[in-house]
Image (cartoon, rainbow, N blue to C red; front, top):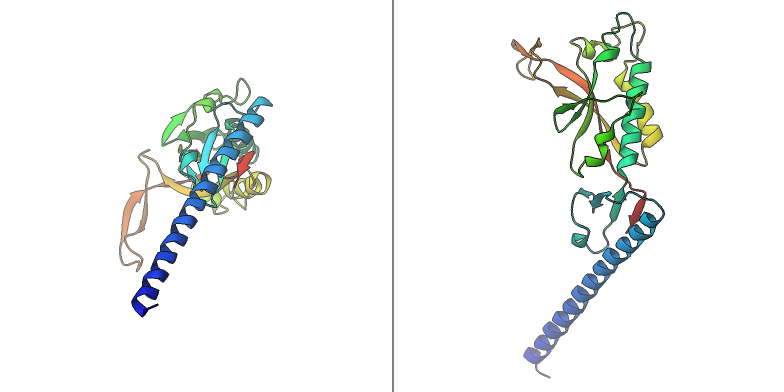
Length: 225
């Protein structure tokens, strides 16, 4: 066999191997999808959420059929998110400084930046059945001094409130959800003095920021990979 013929044979073998590997990966990907859907159907027959949140390869709302070879499909019950949010609310209220009651009454629920009413005693948060996979759920305190509370300004809460509850929530629900502590801007008309740049050369007025706990499902009750 000439060198040219040998080279062509190697190329042909490599192409055939690539086609076989590609077909095998596609076959395994479809199996992952099929098994995940079957597992979901079995769990739904036992009472699992009929319209769960879908997380494919860690992407919220990505269709299961788009799972990658060796990827992961997760289904999250809306009820899990509701339980987490209501538990966090109760802990925030319990640990709020109670001198005037203003701080304790200023925890609000926001979904995609829009405030929603809730009633922990009367009916909880019924609209959670309408939550979509990519929705951003946040609990925020809107008092102007909420940031100072987190810095130990109140002797009643020297370690802050949101920082403490965030840590508790992560320990309790860390296997069910991604729970993050953030600082958010709200259009409430409060401004504070701060530095205009990292070199701290000039002080300016800028919008106040508020502590927020953000919740997103991360590991579902039904998972296949």
